[in-house]
Length: 404
Ligand code: F3S
Image (cartoon, rainbow, N blue to C red; front, side):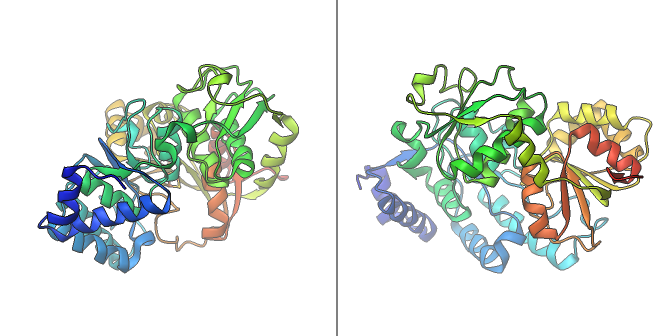
């Protein structure tokens, strides 16, 4: 692999072992994937920050790295295993919380920015079109590549750490023009009105596309930011999609010719839409409602505050967000309304990255296809995928569907 003088110095001469080791990790990765050189990056987003995911091995790795490591580029941190300011009031155990805090301290020592969110693009980490970055967290990667036009592979914790320490990534995969073209064309014949509709499309397409790039044509209405957040999360959870294009909407797909050839499209009509919905239907008591996967933006806060205003919920109700966006919600008065209704705003974490809930929930409803996909396996719950309005209705009644 070609290395610049600076890269050679980092590999052979840097006094800090963690820098030499990081270069070796990146070069080995690059050689596995056929990279001919390294690329400079401007920022990183680190996954694998939750103690639930890393365990003691990850904790020790990061603590060791922090003894001499320092991030060369701004690096935001992904969702963690606790609400960092409220863990004592919630169900997180002290043992777990203390281990999690040790991980956070180590990252902070290296310069990691304490965002603790899967939506770093809502809190200041907004890469530009064509910019090379090193991001982990599948939903954020799909959003950065597809909606922002930045360039990243789906990185893991160790590779982001190495990239952040050296400011480099190997030039392969989605960093290269030739790998950013579409493979599967989806003809969308459904009017997509809500973020759940976009999540359903993403869930359907991810299953077919796997690791490849899906291209959507026929979407007439311009999606809002949260629609694209929902689509990114869904397509990256039923499949391992890191990049998608929407013809006429996402920045690399101004025309169909720019992203895909003339191939037979896969149909996404109401039949396919309903098949996804059927997989996630519930008709019974609802123990828990979770919204904010990916973490809420401020407009979603506004909407949920309006829906909950003057109401009381019977089911447990979690609204997930980054702390930075919650501060805005506090200022706008949304937090008060939501909490008065009996819902709980949880920052920094989510059910997928937090330790298992001790309450023995049996039924969960959400408007997120990603959460609906993971929750049954993680928590042994029956999961319903509802519109956000229906999530609120279900929480107020304490059940959904059925005869009650
Ligand atoms: Fe974010 Fe957790 Fe959902 S990391 S995308 S809230 S599963």
